[in-house]
Length: 365
Image 1 (cartoon, rainbow, N blue to C red):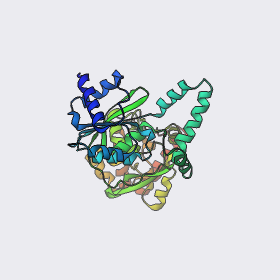
Image 2 (image 1 turned 180 degrees about the vertical axis):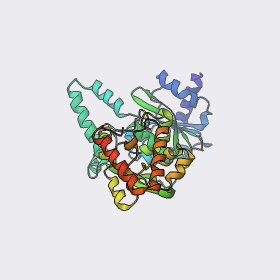
Image 3 (image 1 turned 120 degrees about the vertical axis):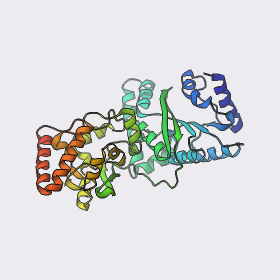
Image 4 (image 1 turned 30 degrees about the horizontal axis):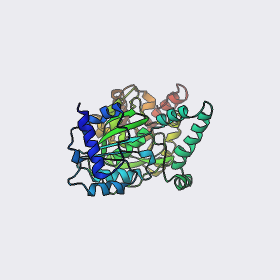
């Protein structure tokens, strides 16, 4: 590996754009991680800076003699007020296939730092206050206004799932990531140009797009059990971890600690009663799923699903399948029975599911 070329590339970019020095230049681990991506570039096509302001990226690139192929922004995104705006600006300045390098401090890395920084006992008290003020406040109405007024958005607690979700939302895909020096560094590749991104909500109740009857996309209400923006990395997390027993994604880092409790008690699904009342769902029926998850099913089941409404109580809790293949068999059996005898089938499946949940403690992970 040619570290000297890597260092020269960084140095030329910094000199040319007069930005901050590469903060971890002494870290062999970080250089080893980034070198395969930066060393292959013409130094004139790589921009390295540390900024929380999208305008600084635009100003730096105005002095560039040619379009860059890599932008490395080494400011933690925890200190960026408008993260999506920064990501979108970066996206627009890169060609498709261009690289974006950045970093964040995840909650686990933040906890390690706080626990090491303060005396024992005090560190737990500080951590609790830090979590409430910098993790919970920015997500709640009124409180978020207080938080941003006092901090300008600096030093927020942002999860890995949210960081990656925002990147996918803004047209990138994750190539690689690594914890180095108390930060999570990522390399992302531009996969498409994004325009006019709709606003997303941090709120505890949100809407997810799911495939309904006839292939119509419906918005299903749920209590948030995953980090914000998690839906945009579903395919990535599936490729990373695959599925476990019950057809769920294995080791899904998108699920929050509170979210695990919500799922065990079914509280996360209560708002779906709104969809039942609106007629998007029925009480018993196949689980409303995303387009990505539907793509994992075989052609026969995809066609069968288009003939029925999804439901609040899925056949999963009646049959308790163990694998994706078992889930497909269960759903095919239910749909075919429902198409033949709708009322009888839903009554039978409802009581089977009720018995498994109440007596056998069947739960969704």
